Amino acid sequence: MEKVIIFSAPSGSGKTTLVKYAISKFENLAFSVSCTTRAPRGEEIHEIDYFFISPDEFKSRISTEEFVEFEEVYKDKFYGTLKSEVKKNWKNSKVVIFDVDVKGGVALKKYFGEKALSIFIKPPSVEELQRRLTLRGTDDVETVKIRVEKATEELTFEDKFDKIIINDDLNKAKSELDKIISEFIK
Image 1: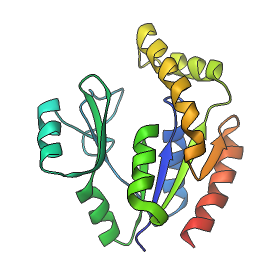
Image 2 (image 1 turned 120 degrees about the vertical axis):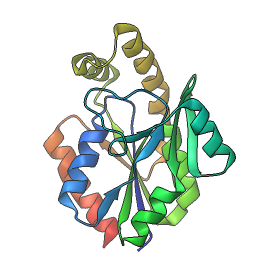
Image 3 (image 1 turned 180 degrees about the vertical axis):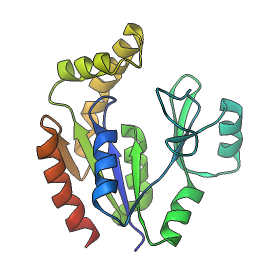
Image 4 (image 1 turned 60 degrees about the vertical axis):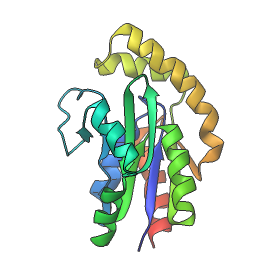
């Protein structure tokens, strides 16, 4: 069963929380660890949360076509999906889960086509998103401002996804997610 589920959202929408929930709920899902050139945040661990690599190594992997998709989200802040991660999980009969930015989600849907279910996690409002990012405490005020500006742009992409979940109530969002994933993987 070569299928993938793509989760995308503006930063702070609760996407990662919902991805972790889905993986804990459905045993045949496997998280695709992405590559990034940014520094680890909080308690993130190399090869578990991301492959944290240098911009030079990332660019080298681009030149050898090791990515399904990649993007320079901010100057020298690259994110990408390794082909080897997808193949490894499919070999183990897993549905691959992606936790990617919005443009990455659109690129992955285009790449995988009918094998993919793309889900857009939407915050209840931009104001709530800003509040969540501030409370998270991982970024300074200027970085939060930049993320909120980027989120406003990213919200315009929601119509490019198969399903939209508004994350205003976590239990409701989890319930919607259960139904969407169950229908896709059956």
